[in-house]
Image (cartoon, rainbow, N blue to C red; front, side, top):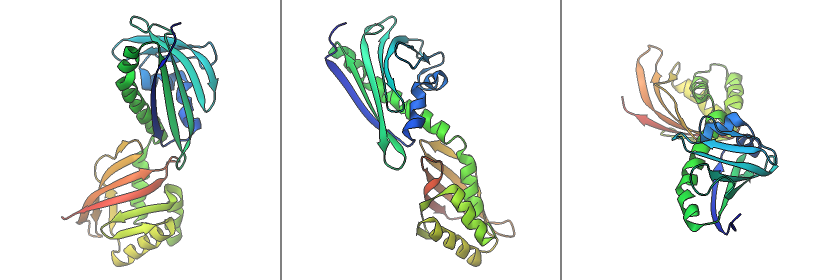
Length: 256
């Protein structure tokens, strides 16, 4: 093999724990989810690595080393272009980062500068796809989380408010909107109970779909009074923690 003296490096942070992220390098179904239908990986030393891109291009190699849930190394090359199968080496390492997230570090070693440069944008794109695939599985039903958040604002039982928040929100959840500057589930719970005293029987409900991208959810809402008439509307931006709970909410009110 030609000396692989030209290296590409890239690092991203994914809001999911390392063990969750590593599954996408050891399970063929998840591997194919971010490479393309028909891609497979046999995650053991000597195991085959195969990539079939959506445009039909194919690449192959074999696993050199694997240490769950932190490191995998495999050779890589195209079936019909250079570098050919086994013509380069990819190493991916994972380490804890932030609040339950993962720092992914990629190095890709090549024999030629042109081959390295050709892959710079490819990896920028591919790891972006990867981050979305991981987040979409981790937060498979963000709509339910959003609906539960809106529902707790009309929960009549004080203890029920606290119990609901414990299920759907992080203990240090932050809430910001025109009438809120709150930190912590206890503060949010008191605010909800106060809002029920001053705006009795007002109900919040989602208006349209909840849109999700890498742990951030955008959802429109409508507030209605006990007579069913609209009292307000707006948009909430939710930030989801790696365990699926809400860690921050920013609300934008619009006049009716």
